[in-house]
Amino acid sequence: MSGIDSEILLASVPLQERSLRAVWHPCTQMKQHEIVPLIPIARGEGAWLYDFDG
Image (tube, rainbow, N blue to C red; front, top):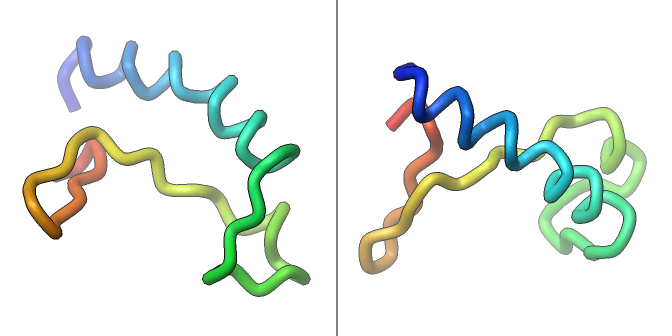
């Protein structure tokens, strides 16, 4: 991961915390909702989503 990607990933931490507090994730087992880490998405192309590792 490049330095820029690391900065973006760190900047997404507040968004992840907000997401856990405010957004219902319908594909997540509710028992694991707060212990399974969210996958921050770097970009999307059509139907494909890419995380920061590609």
